[in-house]
Image (cartoon, rainbow, N blue to C red; front, side, top):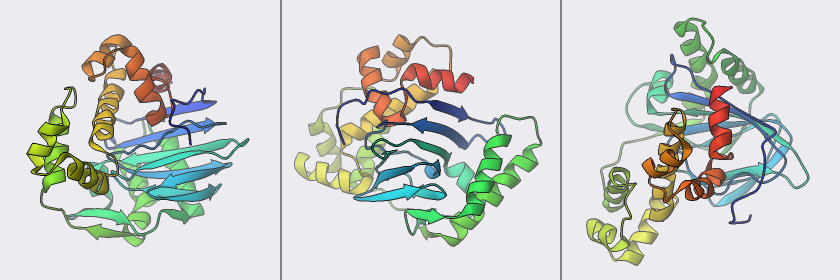
Length: 271
């Protein structure tokens, strides 16, 4: 998989949010060539293949995922899903943050998927039904019920529970990056914060969070840019506010993580 920014135009890119379900985002996409580089999300993601197939990098392994199957991706798990060569991939990805997860399973701790793949026709149908209701004026109670019906079997039967962890060296660095994502942070400062050598910190952080510190900072900047693109702020200003040097820097970082250019992403929010 090339490390360069992919050149592509998605055939379909539709994102749906709903004010009644602030912790959930749905994305319907169709691609014919590579769109994503290795990246992470802060949310739990269920990626349903509607047609075609993908060779998906999930963590350290590669899987073939075909129509009717779903990839299960936890927060911070590095992944990249692209169409097979000369193929076309149509997928529906639903992302749930911690608040949405609590709606489904409640309790303390966080769910952790036991396996990265699942074939579940009922899950596909229920997620498709949920997607159709997002942004519509139907009752909040119905929408929340559809979330629980779609995901409760998945999280309660196919996921274990991970107790909340105490902060460690890598966690301190992560929290620092979250607070200073816009800054040009030196590695020596992060190493001092962690109480480790720079080389040790790089290994420790990547083992804990799937990406080295610089890539994690880039992830945070892209997430901030996504939020700003939902406003009327000009793209050049979005780039600066998110911590990028300029608009070109934003495009290079944004596109392989999100599977769309900033302009395409903004249009998808308005469709």
